[in-house]
Structures are given as C-alpha cells and as structure tokens.
Image 1 (cartoon, helix red, strand yellow):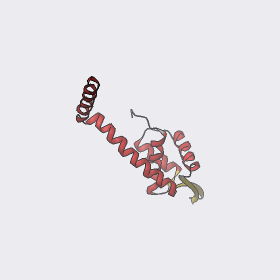
Image 2 (cartoon, one colour):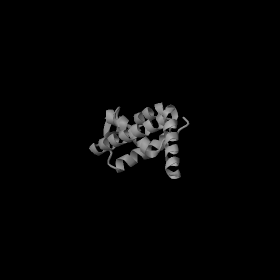
Image 3 (tube, one colour):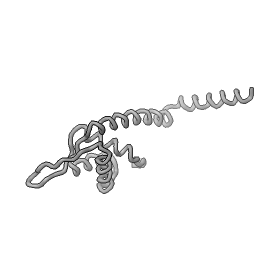
Image 4 (cartoon, helix red, strand yellow):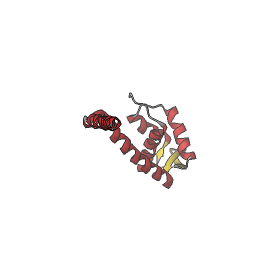
Length: 121
C-alpha cells in the first residue's frame, strides 16, 4: 500500500477489531495484516501502548494446554474509538473532496477570486 498508517489510525484499527470481540495477539495481528501491510513487530508495541493508555486490558485463558493472552477493549477504549471514527469520517470526507470532487476546485477558485476582489477595494 502506498499510504502509511499513522499511530492514531493504527490505534483505531486495533480498537475497531477488539471492539467486535476479544482477540488473541496473533489473531489480532493477522486480522490487521489482512488489510494493511504491517509487520507483527510493529503491532505489539501498539498493543502495549493501548494497554498503557487504558484502552485495552489483557487476560490469559488456557488453550490446548497453554495460556494465551487476550486483549479486550475498555470503556475508555470505546470512547477513544468513537472519537477516532468521528475524526476519520471528517478526514475521509475532506480527502474525498480533494481527490474525487471537482466542485472543490471551483469553490477554491471562487474563494480566491473573492479575496482578490476584497483586497482591490
């Protein structure tokens, strides 16, 4: 993928996955990697940061004789995810306007012309 993920966007992706269901670390990384080109070594620090920020909690559960560490979203994590979703919608809308909507060029042109007229008065 050409576009790189920023830390907040990666946090939002992780929180979005864990919001649906608690996730084992490996499974979580695989779900993210299905959609985004990212290494496992990049994702584990994200999980630790989200845990430190109290967006995620962990718990261990037995699986085939071994313990697995699962990540679960907290109430604070849900609120942060809601914030990220709102911000994403605004961001996506603005980028879509720039890349897909020809009307934006006309808006910008008329704004520039309006400012030029005001400065000439």
